[in-house]
Length: 262
Image (cartoon, rainbow, N blue to C red):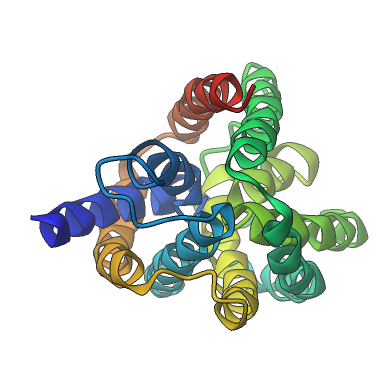
């Protein structure tokens, strides 16, 4: 029964994570805290760092599967994806060590505060006309601030590895609202960046013993399947709907986590 639950969870996480380009960590970390920490229904995690490391494993499988699907659809903008991914690597490595400092309560509180800020920012930006480009291709002559994207990606790598979220929750709004990417292209490109950065973060988390392998593998398999579904669904989904759904989900989870960590 536990294996079946983990697989179904992975499919749901993979579908939603790929649909909005966040890799699934947004859903997994709260789920692990609510249902799989010490004293919960399935007490697999005894340290906050194990929640982060196991989540990042699933983020990697989801992002890798989603990236393959988006590459087949020719929606990954490599001119940005490659330098952004490389810029995340130092922070992804260091973030795994920062995760060791979390207690259960501090993870709840700081992760909740982070998500609350991101939810507010995404909702505010989504009420503006900018960022609602429905194109699934890069417009001819498209230009963006590449140095700014690289600098921001460095910080994204650290935060993503520290919280086990992958970084798409930051990268997608950054590319859409600050750098001017079409939302569908931003989502696909973010998946590519996630696949690279989460791999490096996962390696260091594994070395530190932060990954609990049974739920990681079961949920990871489901996430890989869900990622393919999410990539297909995204073709028929409007960018505004994607980003609004993401902002509301983040806000609800953030409030709950802050309350638990206080």
